[in-house]
Image (tube, rainbow, N blue to C red; front, side, top):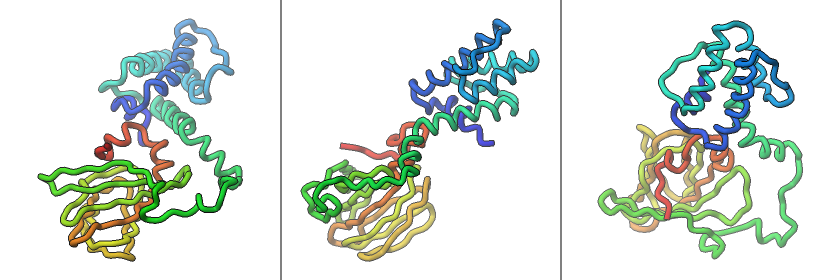
Length: 253
């Protein structure tokens, strides 16, 4: 058990809205345990029902559930709980994950084409396409950082393809993020640093950027280093608990 829910509360990585949803269930359980009554099951999630049954089983468990509710209300802190309680409340993490990604999962399983009923040209793009959307540009002369990122004009729900351009002799910043990515090099020469590994790259090469690795791309040539970065941001951006962009340490314009 990874205690993702406990850790998310401690690190304040769930949104105020998500926290309030959890607290609504916890308050119903709290009221029932304090008044020695049975809550209306239809008002409780499956996890809240389990928590109520755990708290109603004996006085020690009842006090722990009440203490847990107060702990969530106060925003966490260094308080430990029994493994039994942790195993139950971890279900809140799974419920929050479903709230974030469930609609996408349902659409995938619906087996319906997402092709829009418009001219076929919307299904292709290219370098220099006026519909490319500039996302950000970061330039830090002291660190030899100078690069820009544009997003391909496709309507996508999981994949997130971006054109990255790094100026000669420059690099992007060292960073890490939840999504995994494949780089497809189009022009220029350079090298890709992935944790302790370093590989030279040229047009026609592909590079794997695993999830949560520290990585950086460096232009070692005399022309722009251009590559297509294809990531699963549409999924990880929804499922990751916390400030995604702050974690990735990107500087947006």
